[in-house]
Length: 224
Image (tube, rainbow, N blue to C red; front, side, top):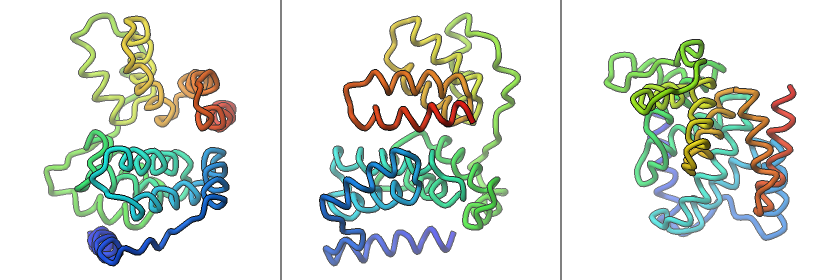
């Protein structure tokens, strides 16, 4: 918890002084973007902090950039550090960029890897109201048959079930609901190889150049 408080004090002091300690020129930005999209966690983390310091944190467009690169960093991460940073970002003011329990998912995932700050936060949450438990993936293998099941599957996907996310993707795709893209990415993050493969294909077909590059990352991950 002390580390988390320090992060916010650091952000406040730096922003108050109008200084960006993560200042990057256009060439450096392009280089870090390419590295991040191909799988480098540190580059993605740097980009997220760059946008955190460079613009008004209440601006929606800038928040989207912060969230985008922080989420890429969390997906790339193998140490737990970037996943922990993403948890802090998701669950804290002024950002709160995603489902709060999804933030806890990244915290507990980081803790499982062994990242100390995450382990400390999990320890302090034992007696708090921030309850979290990873989903039992086996319980969500069957396809969704009616709308009454959606809330249970969504909760399970948010809490780490790849099967739940995969079935949500199929359900919303079949019903022409654009939220299928969100659940497909959640499934890829949760470790579903099928979601990774489908997500890579979706990104490859996108008109966004970032998506096209990112497709390679998920395709490789689906085969690993």
